[in-house]
Image (cartoon, rainbow, N blue to C red; front, side, top):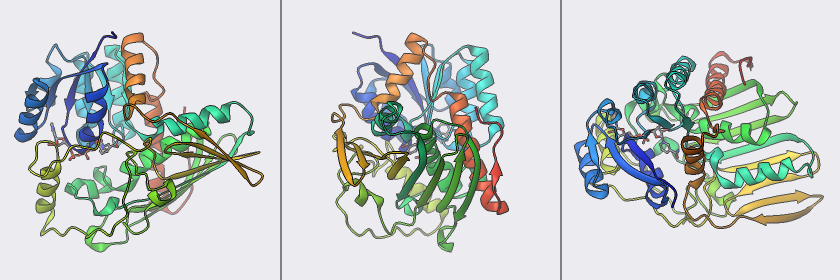
Amino acid sequence: MKRKLRIGVAGLGRGFTFMLPTFARDARVALVGAADTRATARQLFAREFQAKTFDTVEALCADPEVEVVYVATPHQFHAQHASAAARAGKHLLIEKPMAIALSECDTIMEAVRKANIQLVVGHSHSFDAPYARARAMIDSGEFGSVRMITALNFTDFVYRPRRPEEMDTAKGGGAIFSQAAHQVDIVRLLAAARVTSVRAVAGDWDRARSMDGAYAAFLTFEHGATATLTYSGYGNFASDEWQGWIGEMGQKIIPRSKERLKFSDAADEATFKQSLNYGGENYRPAKTDPAGHHTFGTVIVSCERADVRPLPSGVMVYRQGASAFTPLPAPTIPRIEVIDELYDAVVNGVTPKHDGQWAKDTLDVCLAMSRSSQEGREINLKDQN
Ligand SMILES: NC(=O)c1ccc[n+]([C@@H]2O[C@H](COP(=O)([O-])OP(=O)(O)OC[C@H]3O[C@@H](n4cnc5c(N)ncnc54)[C@H](O)[C@@H]3O)[C@@H](O)[C@H]2O)c1
């Protein structure tokens, strides 16, 4: 029996509920504590896991039983909470995006270095098995070099219940911080090269819900490959249709029209979002029997001699008009790849792929997308590792 990672959760919100099936089912994990400002979330956690709860992240970090802190608080708190955990000598799993400014990433990495602890940033969809398998197949050399990546995702991101700051780009809100963090991570993994330039235009199309709700971006990589990233959160077309009606979390989707929620004001909306969260009156646990692997929209990697398409159940390869499918074994534990990487880092001292520098480089691309859109020009990136 492998030893367990003793994880303390900072922030029992939507991000946590998506990781909960992983934590609950992976025998390598013990949830030993949690911090949240909401009493109802603390009460449910204490009941479900017979574990200690705290009303501040700092108090959670002071608990000697906690070995790893999973930072799943809102984006603007990641730097503060991750630094507190590092100062207390705890290993870190930080939800994407790592932080909202490059200087905050530096602060976290410096604290991690000083404390000599491990840092993994995730979950982000670049952990998902179909992308890892596609990358391994490309690495075999059979298809030639990556030349062009096409990534598209159409969701209802804009119309999900939100906290006010989730709609404000300056505070880490909008589709670029929340969603490009996934898409950029995926195309960087598949291209396996530094991003050299970014041109992007963000879309804010509904005055009643003003935010970066869509974007189109064009990335170049140092080996000459390119990637186009298309994202719409306006809830019309759903790219789940192109994934065989398997959703982002590997769940079977039954297409249906959805009535848009109406709120009297931002506070009313935030209260409703809280009610859906862990411990809230409308909370429903995430489904734990996914029909497929997690993915993030449609992705096609065009190599010199083949187009490679990761799907929830495997990888399709198209060559000269013919297609061949490499199936993946059905997922046993969703997002098991996150625990694999965290466990290897903490227990075996293996440097993780999704470390601070990796996540900082992804944030750098996301920030360049925002800047490119605001300034109407291409941004050259010089500090990618
Ligand atoms: N990987 C994914 O698929 C995924 C999905 C959703 C969210 N996330 C990420 O999870 C993180 C949190 O976003 P969310 O959507 O869960 O937000 P949320 O509002 O649903 O949850 C945040 C939680 O943190 C708590 N909180 C807020 N301030 C706090 C503080 N100072 N101390 C302690 N607790 C505090 C809130 O009460 C709430 O329970 C973000 O980084 C987000 O990008 C990731």
